[in-house]
Length: 375
Image (cartoon, rainbow, N blue to C red; front, top):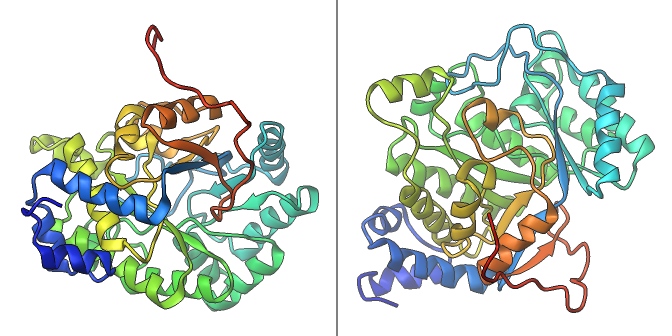
């Protein structure tokens, strides 16, 4: 490894003991040296397989009582999908061989836990085999307050009804300074952490996300990653970490940034964020997901050489990022995902939400990108 990365920092990273100071120092390392080290740790943690999940996003409403300044999806009078409308989307997902449905929506006034339980129970009654990966920590927190019950009880009831895992969204940046500015009515850092811990205690694994590139400092990004690491050391319930670059269009936080001459994060900064997350989380969170929706397909493919080992889902229906200006499509086919993975020199593997193998690659099915292909 290049000597520009100090030996003691390298050793701490191999041992899963990187510090905040290490993270700040890594920001100053020449990018391709940083990428090489992150890629080495990726190889140690996940091998040469790159995974993806066949899934569908279902956003049941854009109506929301929240006031998040980064949101371009919220409306005051959006439609709320009925159970039957949600089930129609689940049936379509099953026809496309989806193994997972990811259901989230705005925070509805006076709508408590029974609404969420009804969705889960309807899906499991018809499709007991499909994995329900749904409801952010904020949604669970909101529903439990409306229903006047402890978060712990709400999670246990969701688990009993059939909720399998939860997306670790609503994390944004786990800094109360940042949250007070961009989402003052959202749950605080400690409350988000506690919901996630209690979900793990109830037997509900979660992902973990970080929406970066708005008003946070580089130090706050690193502190966020280390908070995720501490949760994982305690519970072991986090399946993946997903850095999500902020989309600055059609929302108040982004409009202010653009007026100041600041736009979406540069691609190099995105790749460095992925690399540093791999290094800081090494030995704790094995899977780093590159979002093709947020990064675009080509940059997501390159992120596979900067620490990422997963490309997320086929989605079928993506609304939230698209509302904020993401222009990379709302669905992707398995064939294109595998093409991207082979093009990065890796081996594609369909996975379940919990990173279990869905199928072995058919013998001789490997595709090698060649010349003359029009894109």
